[in-house]
Image 1 (cartoon, protein in one colour):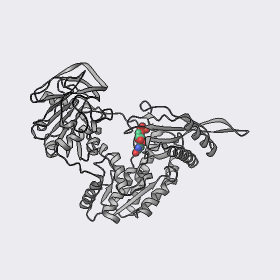
Image 2: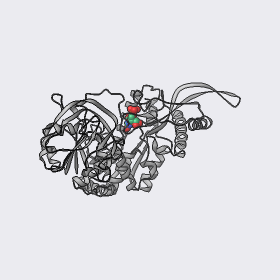
Image 3: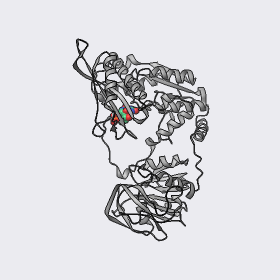
Image 4: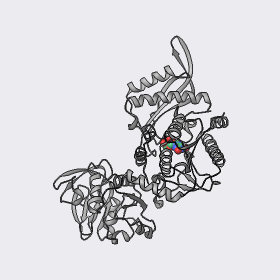
Amino acid sequence: KILILDFGSQVTQLIARRVRESGVYCEILPFNADPARIAAFGASGIILSGGPASVADEGSPRAPDYVFSAGVPVLGICYGQMVMCAQLGGDVKGAEIREFGRAYVDVVEDCTLFDGAWVKGAREQVWMSHGDHISAPPPGFRTVAVSEGAPFAMIADDARRFYGLMFHPEVVHTPHGAQLLRNFTHKVCGLAGDWTMAGFRQAEIAKIRAQVGTGKVICGLSGGVDSSVAAALIHEAIGDQLTCIFVDHGLLRGGEAEEVVRVFGEQFNIRLIHRDASDLFLGQLAGVTDPEQKRKIIGRLFIEVFDEEATKLGGADFLAQGTLYPDVIESVSALGGPSVTIKSHHNVGGLPEFMKLKLVEPLRELFKDEVRELGRELGLPENIVGRHPFPGPGLAIRILGAVNRPSVEILQKADAIYLEEIRAAGLYDAIWQAFAVLLPVKSVGVMGDGRTYDQVCALRAVTSTDGMTADIYPFDMGFLSRVSNRIVNEVRGINRVTYDITSKPPGTIEWE
Ligand code: XMP
């Protein structure tokens, strides 16, 4: 396995994704993690990520000495290359020419990392983002690629198996970057590339059995990808020792509650408690218009109802959660300050303080797309596995202003039409999230010969990789007017449709 030491780059997770795509397991640790822990990881190769600092600055991050004395291959990317250079006796300067974005390198020598990708003499496109550059490589290194702004764009010490790249091989804008990383893990580190989802499934089942023994596990099922895959995997491991609790707040997309019951209760034969708590949730939400207030009410009720159902079961020993790897990666704390709360997030299955259960988190090591792959491996329907993310508070935060049953039904209908058209146009998988929002605004319209005075619906569709930033999806006007026509004609209560053209930032993805 490979260890990635993070120096705070925005794209460190992409390195991990690329390494895993090459069939090699890897984990990310902060550069300043306890050196004993870094050594104990037992890496067959180490990758040093990029980062925002300059090695010329006092107190800027360095790799622990272990990295260069362990006798394993090391690949330094961007800031990682600078660190490598500075710590091994080379010289780094602030660059006169800074390179950001697309750049070209000339391949001046052969290198193992180039196999099947680059050849000597070629000019190759890469993605650069650096201020510093190397003015003298450390002893033992040769230069294998150069660029205008970086005469040592890529350096190699074949004897020690150390490689330094000025550019980012992990991003798609470096077209052969994935092959370079694959050559590092397979050819240089000698790893077989046999880490697969089928293998993960078997190994994880054994781990779950070992952890749980004869204990009882409860799992909050929401119909979302993560809890669905976690439930299916745990069920495969321990069968009826697992009970899933589906707290139905009545704020899911149209038809989804029924689907959860059908797929998990009937098809997978999982012990499932479906608690229809929609009266309770809608009752307490009545008249509430403040977004944070809505979120808090839903979060609190969810835990209450979940706990009530768990108590009825006579308790449990473990709580299953669909925690993913991005939630557990430790951030490079030295570089990030405290952040403000924009929205208080509610995650289905959140552990209340008073339920001191041990956690079963079988997806802790996986990225989202790996969870999807595992879901397919387990036989979950594509409809669930490929589903867009959905917020815990559900449609309550997509109905602006007060929430009630009629408005939920109106929004469910409009949303279903929108998603149906997106699927029919083959656009669903190109979009991170698409949904309709019901506005507490009425406008005048005309239908047939009559005047209408109904609500406005906004459509939202964004592309994103992690929900942290997002761009609007550029539908063509023909598509949007088709959806608009259908919604106004088919959904009573809506007579006007708008398209939200705000990116994130400054907007957020959800409206509340
Ligand atoms: P925003 O609106 O903050 O959303 O740009 C970013 C992503 O988070 C989702 N979201 C939530 N997910 N519980 C969740 O599990 C929540 O309370 C919640 N609020 C927003 C949102 O759908 C988007 O994917």
